[in-house]
Image (tube, rainbow, N blue to C red; front, side, top):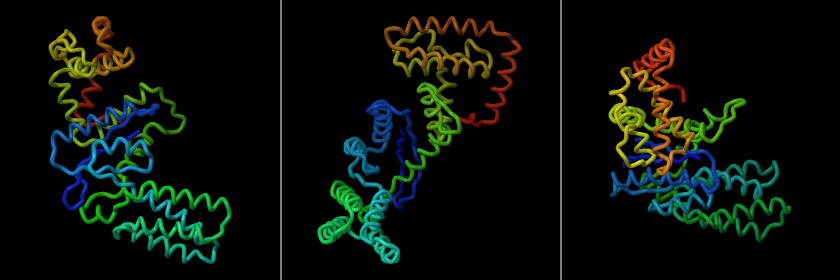
Length: 317
């Protein structure tokens, strides 16, 4: 599951995009909660900006967007796919290929630039449905298109959006599904557990949201990995784990290693407030064990991590 928050200027040019992703789950509670937090942060920074929601025809999308946006728009390209289905029914046969292409092109143009065109197209399809006989399968197809337009015509105000330089398509989010998720998680013979996939998706969202990667490491350098975990899991206490690791670990390479190791352990243990003390003790013991690791292995890892930091670019996520 992927959501995007895109910023557009007065001319309709996209300036910045923030990505949010989560692994599949029933009800999407975790994803929606995370996405809602991102929206609240943006609204706190820009309270007077117009907010427009874009999505496909799924009902759950509109229930969420209606709470956070002033206007909701159905993705234009999804609507054109339904118009294509209607054209295949209304202009059947090879002899009507030219008429079908002309009607589809004209209908898409009207829908995009003419106010009230969605209602007129709906009436045209209703009239054809009542006056013409057709096979049952094609009748069902046309009825599905009519139902789609009936339920969503209030969200097909594309002409108004074009005049206001507002987007009419969810292409940014569609592209994010491919870039954030499919390119990394859907490779040949890949299998993922929920914990690992969630970690990779979070890192990819940070990496592809411009400026987030550097902000993340600035926080780690400033407060330390333990401090970030303390804040993440809401432990609420200034414990040993919240101290800056630069006072304990001498090299940035070991700093990176202990950060990733501690994060992985906390993810596995699913740290809660009640058991935080027990888990923090376990992490301290793990940290002491890490100090006893073979020095040659540590030096090799430090060398690799220094090269990574000097290049100033993330690992392939």
